[in-house]
Length: 273
Ligand SMILES: C[S@@+](CC[C@H](N)C(=O)[O-])C[C@H]1O[C@@H](n2cnc3c(N)ncnc32)[C@H](O)[C@@H]1O
Image: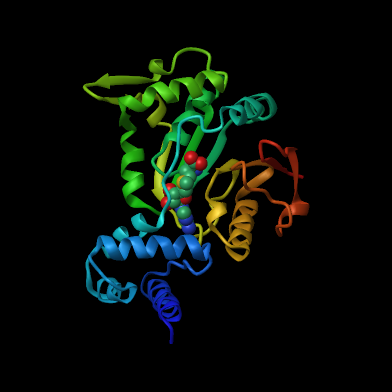
């Protein structure tokens, strides 16, 4: 075998093992990105070859957490793509007002910035007190940060700009307290949010959701996994439930395409027919 084939074999072996040992299927992730991440993880563990990770998978306590942390791309922002929040406010908020309780699922919430953004938007529209927000990810390290709701103060300048560009009514600083060099989001926001571990690759539907937000996650999946997740979302949505995806993601050509209609193709907002 040439070196390339050997590495591909090692990669398949590790992915098989992770699936067998822990039930996490990374074979349906985009191959190039997962290979790069496993190579980086191997280097960080001082391994020359990917296959040297095998004993760690088999015998090292807590290796799964380290592995998942290495596999997940956690880049996020508050009010990411502010214009999407503007369209969401205009097209979806009036529809949410009709519900006595609004159930929201943020799937792949990373460190929580997107979740706090939505909580702030709902608060400004008077809907937060009627909302229950479930935010999930398979990266426990990210979830720990998300639960605390504490972020570096230096990021707040950019987040404040995004908030205003998204149509924020006041000042972002209304929603957090400053201590030394960090900003901590208020209890009023955090108490409406439940952060928990959930793997979209294997775990079940969440049930009875009025809104599912899953942005910038599906781009890392192949068609098979995307379709699994789309079906999971469809099964979790109430009649007329809304799905919000990232700006490079769409339900076009997916198995649920005929079951939802686009409210805004540009903002990737879809609704159960
Ligand atoms: C790039 S971040 C997106 C964060 C946020 N939604 C945003 O758009 O700013 C992708 C997140 O998806 C999570 N993720 C990837 N695969 C997942 C899976 N199978 N189940 C749950 N979360 C997953 C990663 O851990 C990561 O936190």
